[in-house]
Length: 245
Image (tube, rainbow, N blue to C red; front, side, top):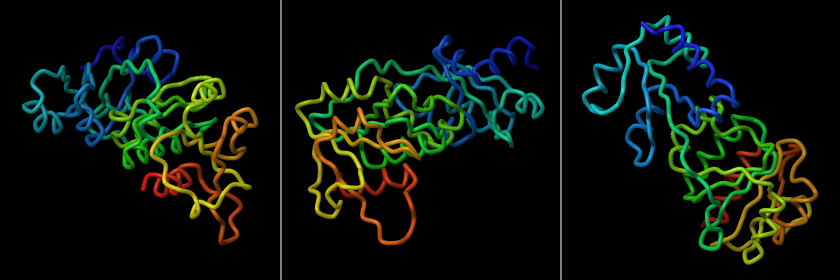
C-alpha cells in the first residue's frame, strides 16, 4: 500500500517546477519503462507496478527498486487516462553541452510548444540518427508526461538541451544553418547535409525573426496541394529524410 506522502511526492512530479527541483521525471507504460530499464546510462530510481508486470520483469531487473501497487493506486499516480501497468521514476540525464554540429546535423527547435509535436520530433530525430536537439527556452518541457509518451523511448537516447536559440545559433558560425521558409530553395534541389543545424519553427508562427536572421541556407518543402501549412513534426521528418540521405 502506498503512503499518502509517497502518492503526494509522485503527483508533485506532474509539475515542471518539482521535476526541476528533484531532477527526476516519470515514464509510464510497459514499452517505455522497459526501454528505460534496458538503455545504458538511464537511471531508473524507482518503479511502481501491478503484480502482473512484476512477475515478468522483476527477475530481469533484480537491482531495480520495484514496489507492487493495486490498480486503484496506479490510477492515483498515473497521468494517463487509462493507466498502463507501470510507472517509473527516472533521473534526468546530465546533458550540459549541445551536440557537436560540426560533425553531424543537429536539430534546433524554435518555440515548439505542443507536447505531442515535441515528443514526435524527438522520436524522428532518433530514427534519423540525429545526435541531439537544442530547444528554445519557450519550447514545451521535454520531461512533460505527454512528451515522454510521444517519444516512445527515444528520449532515453537523444540529448535535449534548452538555450537562448538566437544567441546559440550565432555561435555556430562554422557550419550551415538550415531553415524551412516560404522563399527558400526547393528541398529537391538542396544537397544533403553532413553537418550543421536544422531549425524547425513554431507550429503556427514559424521561425521567429531573430532566429531567421541566423539561417544561412533557406529551404522550402514544395507544396503541391492546397494545405496552408505542415505539422512541425511532419515537416521535420520530410526535411531530415532528404538532408540526411
